[in-house]
Length: 277
Image (cartoon, rainbow, N blue to C red; front, side, top):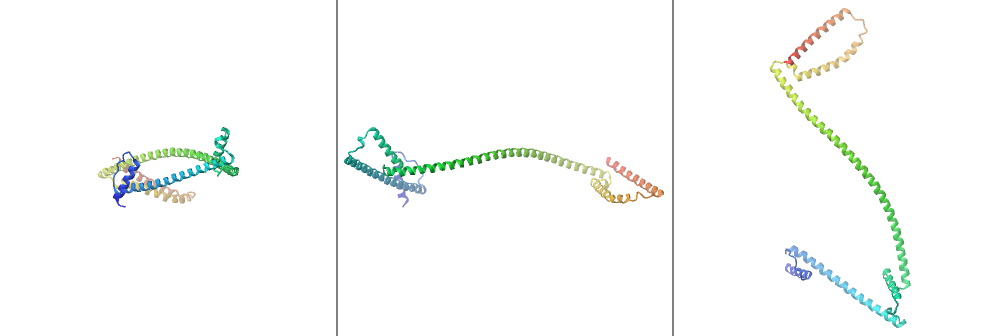
């Protein structure tokens, strides 16, 4: 179908839909035309189906009226009975009978139709009650699970609050440690610069290189190693302490130790005095 023909059908359909009201403005292009044409076709099919249903209902209503008239005439001919001749009480009973038949969806108002319909309704009632009991049990189970879930949720919320509190405290500690670390790093750099500057000044004044910071650290490490090595020697020496010493030899050793001690003290004093300059 060509686009112009679709546009003409769409325009005719919109005019039919809106009637005397103005048609809203819309952008006319192939896409909108295709969409509106599709809607108009679906609307046309729906209107046709609705018209067929209406006609069918009209035909059924006409058939029911004819059947009712036929039954009324039959009653008049056979027993000279007419609904109009009933008393008000009889009319109420008759209306109640008709309403019951319609509610039970029976084919007629005879007792043979009413009894099976009532039995079916009773069975439906028992099934509904049984289903209600099952739903109540399920509901009780769900309420129990819901209570347990709420208790668990409360516990989890409390645990979460405690965890957040501890986390906040730990975060504060970490921040404090980081600040201290930054401070210590800054001080360390400051001390390194101070030591480097002092070493440069001492070096300019003729300080012995063996008195530098790195040299002193190396000497300290060497001294610690020597102390570690003397430990087994001291233990070995302890085994000889119970022997009778030679007085003259011991006196010689004492004098040698005193001289070595004097030399070490003098050297240490000299180095300390140079550091104070």
